[in-house]
Length: 212
Image 1 (tube, rainbow, N blue to C red):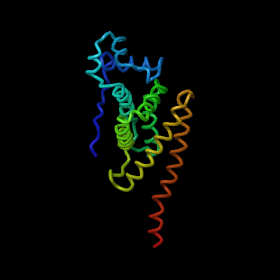
Image 2 (cartoon, rainbow, N blue to C red; image 1 turned 135 degrees about the vertical axis):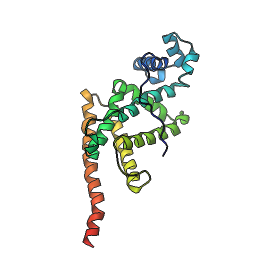
Image 3 (cartoon, rainbow, N blue to C red; image 1 turned 120 degrees about the horizontal axis):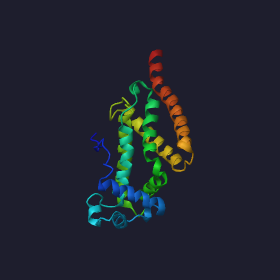
Image 4 (cartoon, rainbow, N blue to C red; image 1 turned 45 degrees about the vertical axis):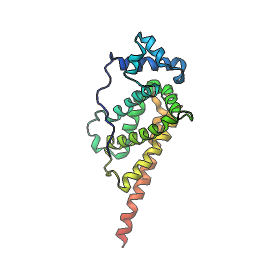
């Protein structure tokens, strides 16, 4: 499956694209994401609105640039010995990297997602579905899951990881605990439960074959 490129380097801190993103986030913290207007962002940065358009076609594109940081965090260099970790621990590390990367603007991030899913914003629905699919594909690759794309096991992993991601996202959206501890505890419980179920699922055929 062809993946959307994710560039390793973040936007330079002094680039106009980064300044636009930072200003939009700051404005959203004060007024909510729906209250952000790119013309006002341009005025705050003392640049023409056309300069903003050169980098972002609309506010949804600014949100996409913010969520791209989550993908970059998942794909960042891993700790030594990562490949030898249990799959559950690799998945947990990568998912928490995504959530931690966006934690500084958690409320605004949730508002961005709600805006994308808002009924009048039908033009954002299809891209949002594909972005969720890409997030899960990048998660599988970042976590070094071995099942080849298109196999039954890979398909089951994708369904399970999608459900896990969405469920954890709901918890994270309301998590006010230090260090997002509630989210971490929830994710740990879900992954341990899933690990047990998967072990039973894939061990069953082997046991049946051994009894024949």
